[in-house]
Image (cartoon, rainbow, N blue to C red):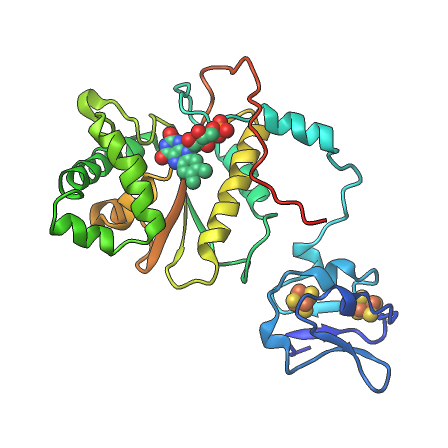
Length: 295
Ligand SMILES: Cc1cc2nc3c(=O)[nH]c(=O)nc-3n(C[C@H](O)[C@H](O)[C@H](O)COP(=O)(O)O)c2cc1C
Ligand code: SF4
Ligand code: SF4
């Protein structure tokens, strides 16, 4: 087989499920009643694997995806709504950690959960750097602090500040002016006396990054982060999304070098990780989002 998409005509039962399930309408029924991939459409395949997952007889082969490596039996049990609700109600952002490293085995289990996440265009756009060397994180924090202190000084100045604000999206400007700057003005992120209110003395850090031009990578990175937060909680670990770390790394050569971020990649999000020191005593009920029902 030297085609990127192939159907074994001997084993194919012509159930047509691959045709129905493919979001890109690539498999088709041919005039001679075979099921085949349309060669003029295989280039838009997003490699979601749905056709292969649907095919009972495992008749489909797609370049880079194999039944041996990329598929397993469907697990029988599934989490019901109440279990999921209870699980999510017990998750909290954890910012206070025990002084205990996170093992490679637990990191790998989080990575396995992340690999189940949906993606916008390509399953391969997101790269993850996992730092379990606490002293590396500790070395980075003063550099991040320096950036936020400089930003605090210039962001409201009429010329330089105006240019910086103008170069950002409205969303980023608002986050900066309505959240980060007030925090800086209230004495945050100074790293004075070694206080770390950026990475929160975490023993581990995940960085979600991608080539700047990669399709849908911002959303994909946030979904990966969300899965990672849930995975951490399922393993008895605590985690928090840290929006402050990515922008600091992106604009700092020393930080990019320290974390070995490939040239051309931007860090979209980060997650601190460790063993929680404290236990929350109550579950928080937050109101539903603003919802419009169109029935
Ligand atoms: C995109 C994003 C960025 C965040 N950035 C930070 C941060 O820089 N520092 C921090 O301490 N918490 C950060 N958080 C955590 C939020 O403060 C936290 O999720 C929120 O307070 C709700 O608490 P909960 O996660 O326990 O429900 C961030 C969360 C998200 C989703
Ligand atoms: S992998 Fe997904 S997009 Fe590609 S042919 Fe199969 S179902 Fe269609
Ligand atoms: S799902 Fe499998 S068996 Fe069914 S038509 Fe497609 S290739 Fe053939």
